[in-house]
Structures are given as structure tokens and as C-alpha cells.
Image 1 (tube, rainbow, N blue to C red):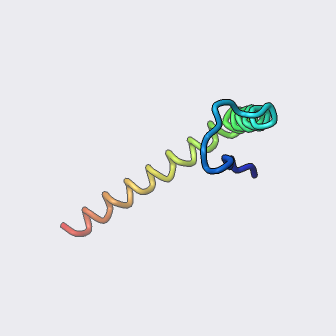
Image 2 (image 1 turned 90 degrees about the vertical axis):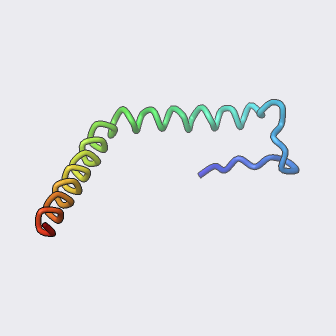
Length: 64
């Protein structure tokens, strides 16, 4: 994991070539992961939200 640390806590005017390359590699990795797993993750989130909504409705009906 890379953490950006600025010398003396101040962001430099220009990033070093190494920092730029690291950021580009990170961005490319994120794009690849979103392309590869994005749909699956969104489907899981939607399923969890539907399950949560159904459970909330069930609790409301039981409480009436």
C-alpha cells in the first residue's frame, strides 16, 4: 500500500515521476477491478438492500 507523504507536510507543486507512475498504476488497478468485479459487487449490494427493506417492512407489519 502506498501512502502519499509530503515533505514538511506541504504538497509540492509537481509530483515526482515515481509518484505519478505509482498513482497511474493505482488508477489502472482500480479500473481493472471495477471492470472485473463491479457488476457482481453492485448485485450483492442491491440484494442486501432488498433484504433489508423486506425485513423493515416485516417488522412494521408485526408492530401494527
